[in-house]
Length: 442
Ligand SMILES: *[C@@H]1O[C@H](CO)[C@@H](O)[C@H](O)[C@H]1NC(C)=O
Ligand SMILES: *[C@@H]1O[C@H](CO)[C@@H](O)[C@H](O)[C@H]1NC(C)=O
Ligand SMILES: *[C@@H]1O[C@H](CO)[C@@H](O)[C@H](O)[C@H]1NC(C)=O
Image (cartoon, rainbow, N blue to C red; front, top):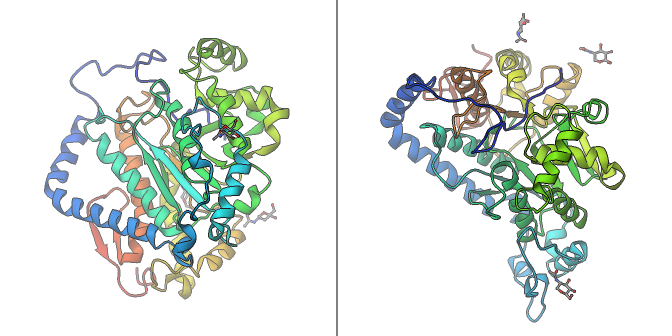
């Protein structure tokens, strides 16, 4: 099934469509009350837990396997040797291109050879972010915290670094454009990272074991979820979803970002691009130039220049539309239980860092043509947890429950290694300790 939803629907001053909370019976009032009751009761406990998780996460970044074998002396700037950071014309801002980034990065690696060790060359930095001010939705910040916790969990488990940005690095590049300056700065700040992985704040990892198949992308510099047919034949601006993507830290990507950012609101060509994009993509029903249409345009109209290095992934949920996913989570849970009941090694308890059973899981998932695989990333397109300006084709309850369900589904995979599991997927607050040999005894 094709998905025609965009990861975000409109800008803060949007006129894209005129949804208003016109009366005081806002759809999420009752939910807010319930939620604030629970958050008062559990504020202390919750706060402590979250703090602990973040401390654990930070500790784990420091101790991450990627770096554990490194002699720290290697990572100090070598005495007397300069690198690109010492050039006064180095700029982290998006409007000043960096020349010869591949050379600069290569020279940096030569000065810091330990980062080139085998097994570390596919280093990933997750970049995400949200606005600098409190969310308009009274429980928006709570939801963003849960989405962030989810990213921290995934990163800790896989030894990835996270950069969460919540300030506009280029003041004019608001909302969905804000990711580009953040990614650009992250590329310069992290020459050791081979990939920057942008993940929208409203997207959650829902398969904590799944690892990006980076080998598959070795000849590409950019990976995005979508359907080539929708872009190239239907000329739809929703043929891809720009809310989650991988971008290689290289000169090609610097150039791509430059070309892409030219369509942004900081550019003198912003209005012109609004018109061009609307004329190109007939289903684009708002006049402003947006990042997703912009990327689609580069794919469609400048395919010779960019297309060869862009991988459009649709084999697994590199990011998936929550509406397609949410009703499958119960069946998927049951299916995984069934398999675990059959295979003792899959239910054996182990330390969080030990992941030896993944191969066994793969054998079972392949047998089923991956038809029951957990969705990797569930993206709450149109739910707008922070602003609360959700797309009125859904109700807030639907969005809210779906977010709880997906986040708890993911949290169960994490908590299980700590010996607990949520009582049910819609119950975010209470858990039960797991008996020995779970789930063979349920
Ligand atoms: C700064 O300018 C020099 C000389 O033009 C150039 O070689 C160098 O690549 C520039 N550095 C950056 C970071 O762009
Ligand atoms: C869940 O599984 C049941 C039994 O196999 C099936 O009837 C139902 O359609 C499935 N639900 C979804 C949402 O896939
Ligand atoms: C998996 O796919 C193959 C090839 O498409 C097919 O022959 C097989 O029946 C499928 N197996 C299941 C369990 O669906």
